[in-house]
Image (cartoon, rainbow, N blue to C red; front, side, top):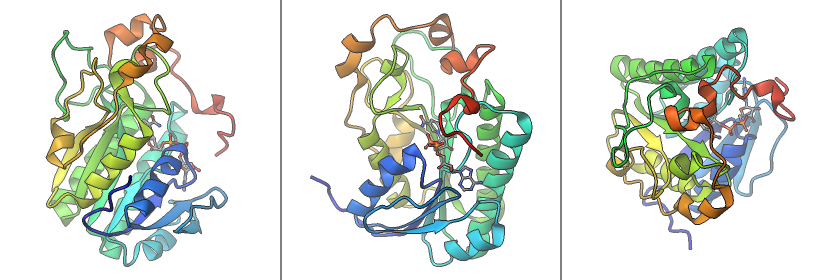
Length: 276
Ligand SMILES: NC(=O)c1ccc[n+]([C@@H]2O[C@H](COP(=O)([O-])OP(=O)(O)OC[C@H]3O[C@@H](n4cnc5c(N)ncnc54)[C@H](O)[C@@H]3O)[C@@H](O)[C@H]2O)c1
């Protein structure tokens, strides 16, 4: 049963045709939020959500779409490694464009999709230890650098212009864990909805960085940041342990960013339909 959110908000979601957005938009609508989906790709039909086909690079149009919104969830971007010019244009310049459009439109809060890969070269902690939500950045790719820049831009827009900003360091958001690393880093689709709803509705968030991760038995990412905004994960990757046992690399055991730390990190072009 979906519990309606305590507060119903008008929320613009960039990257609305992407896989994470497809997980969370129906959940946010079900919780009573009014959602405007924005993507440069063709319209995706979400019951109860409005659609705008638009690039985040179109600053004036994005600002006009944001007018009257309480919050923005910024998911648009390249989600894997790519060449520097593309990462710079889409993930870094694009994030500045979204924050600037939000500031111009008078939006109160922006939630930014950061990534575990902003800190990917942080070593896997000793058993029983957890990593703080705001562990300093140690990017493992140009992609990770773009997420470090996203967090820095969010910090600037909070401190200089007063926007409330939550950076969600999403760990591994998949329908189910794909390998042993994800027994530690999995964020379930249902917990992703809970997390973004909490980031939208928590009072007075200021600027903060929180891990996006489920309640995994083997987890090593702190839940303190999530708890500070009222996020209560329900799911545990352990339920899938038997299915992924043995699927592990030396990179997974060494660094929290796993194979993204290898000389051949997963690349965007390799994605089917990864057209720009
Ligand atoms: N999925 C994960 O496990 C994960 C983990 C960490 C971080 N993230 C971040 O979450 C966000 C969403 O990830 P995803 O897995 O849904 O990726 P995705 O590739 O499925 O979705 C990204 C969407 O952004 C859109 N987009 C790209 N450039 C755009 C532009 N200039 N203007 C408008 N729309 C544009 C694409 O068309 C696409 O629909 C990304 O920022 C990604 O880096 C995802």
